[in-house]
Structures are given as C-alpha cells and as structure tokens.
Image (cartoon, rainbow, N blue to C red; front, side, top):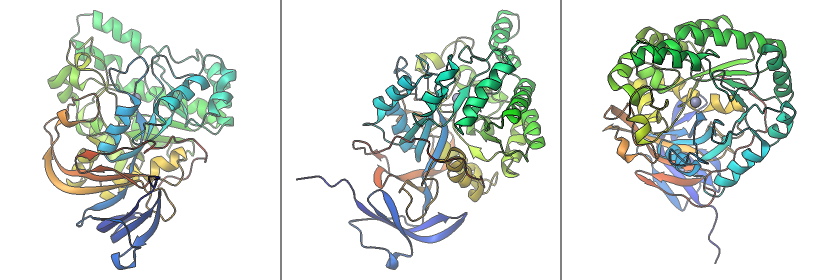
Length: 451
Ligand SMILES: [Zn+2]
C-alpha cells in the first residue's frame, strides 16, 4: 500500500497573522498548501484538527543568514542538524552561507551541498555562493539557483583586490539579478586583530578595536558607492553600529540597499562579552549600549527591515577556551523566536513589525516564492506560537552547538507547533521528519518590495 504523501490539517481557534493584522480564526491545509482561511465552521473537514487554543498562527519564520557548516566541519553542525534546529525554533526556511571548508565557490560545490541535504532537510533550505576566483564562472554558479553572493572583505575568501575588479564582478552579478551580501568590516581587520592580540592590550579590547564600529560604517560607505555605479542589490548582514545606521539612513531612499539585525546584537552588549568572554565572541562583536539603542530605533523606524540569526555553531572546545583562540559565532536558531517575541512583549517593537521582519520581508528580499505569509495557495509553512514562561535551556537544542550566551534567559513565548510544506514537523517538544520534509529553495523570482 502506498503511504499517502499528503495530510489534511485544520488549525483552528487561533490568532492568525494576515496582511499585517491579527484576526481570530483558523486555516485549512491540503497537501503542501494553504487552501482556506476563516472561522472554524467555514473550514473544510480535516483528518487532523489542531486546536490552537488562542495561540498565534504565523507564517513560518525565514532566516536568510545561517551557517550549517557540514563537509569538513561536520563536528560543528551538519545541514541535517541545522535544518532540525531551524524547525525546533519555528524557522521553516533558511539560506545557508558559503564560508565552508572547502569553500562554496563553484556550481559543483553548490550542487554537492544540495545533494547532501535534499533527502534529509527538515526545513526548506537555499544557498549562497562565494565569488569564484575565476569570474567567468559567475553565470554557471547563478544557474544553480543560489540567492546571492557573499563577500567577507576581511577574509582571504574575498577575491577582489581593488574597486575596479569589484566593479567587473558586480556587473556580472547584477546581470543575474542577484544581491551581494556583505559582512561589513575593514579589509585589514584580520591583520589588525593579530597585531593587537600580540600587543599588551587585553584580548577583548584588542578584538573590539580590530572590528570597530567606524570600520563597519566605512565599509558600508565604500560598498554603496561601487554598488550604485553598477546598480547592484546590496544587502548588509548583521548591522551593529550606530555609525552604520547613520549611513543606512542617509541612503534610505536607495532601491538597491537592504539590511538585517540579529537578536544577539539587540539584546546583548559589550558588558555581556566582558562577562562571558569566548561564549559571547562573535563577529561583528557585541557593541555598546548606545549602538544597541540605535539598532532598536533603526528597526522601529524601519531603516532595518529584516531580522536574521547569523546562526554560527561551533564545538564545545572552540567556545570554552582562551578568548584569542575561541571561534567567533553563536547559536541562533532556537533562541530567535522566544527572545524576540519576549522583547516585543516588553514593548521594544510591535508584534506586527517583528513578524514582518521575520517572514514576509526576508521572503520578498530574496524572492522566495509562496512563502512568508499566510495566503491561500501558499505553501503551508506555519508556526503556532504559544505564550508560556520558560527558561532557555541549551542542552535541549537540536543543533550540535548546545551552548548560548542566552542560556537561562527567561522568555515568554515558544514555537509550539511547526508545519513545513503541510507536514507537522514539530509538535510541542517532538520533531518529526520524513524524506524531503523541507525543500531545496532555488531563486526564481526577483526582489519584491519590502514592507
Ligand atoms: Zn554570518
């Protein structure tokens, strides 16, 4: 007998987020798609009915900035554990960064990553590429369905040695209507860090100086200049500095520009870094309270329209050692929703704006079709969010990285039930997957307007 590939589900008696507003009602799912939205009596009969008991029924979150490692860094995270971590956090679609070992910088390597995960993906997943050393390969790489090219000015993985070369690359990328995603930092930050670590300066001060706010803002300034020339979409990853936000504001009318902020920069600051050391080491670093204030303002005035995690898992040893040697990056997927919703409850941002920055805006920026909003005909990627007081406990994470500077934080919301393509992948504490629960996302549409 054939096992049916699809199931029929009704989620009833909830608080639905529809076109920017909350409305009481329910939702019917047939196969992979949403087929009806409305009050319970008007919904189709379903073989499974989930009573939301007044909980929030939201589009599954979309995180356009994760690092799932795998390949030669399986010990940190794999594409499979990463997608399970996403589901555990209520995140139904992720875009995976290319700074892997070996680097994701060719069509072959992107297709290899797709092959590694396509049977086993718990969440939907798409990919980015690095800029290849041979620029003529940009077309071939674009054709694999990637969502953009990532550049790390600070790293050897970043090939352009001057603006002229960068311009040639950008013209190629722009032809394919893909964005350039930048990690804003000084191109010499790596060297500066090494020299400062070797000096008398305390390690944390050296780290903060090597990756300072002004360098972040200056990097943005120079990328804007060159991207304006070539009309390239420029997306700024993890903005942190007050100075950077000022540059974003000055260019707020620009159609090519977009940016994101991460929960750890919104909630933690330099004091947490000094207290927690290696555990809170990340790039860009945790900033001053003034920067943090500016970041919340930028979200609330809608200068920054997207929230991402920069989920960057590392092993226990890499996060529990001397600061200089510790790896930069922290777990993000399973704390995103509880932390951010708790801060919305505290009044730091409206729930409506927060949800848009976690769902429809990332979908529209990256051209992720039929996801990011609850609409008839869309894929049934849904998170039911329950109000419940609990403490972040990193030992329960699905990710291989079972540590976070948020450990023990008291939160008021949790992703209770998560559906991906109509499949109930998370039911309270239980994660369920089947073959291809999540799909491989490929870039098909162009950028749409952000809210
Ligand atoms: Zn990152």
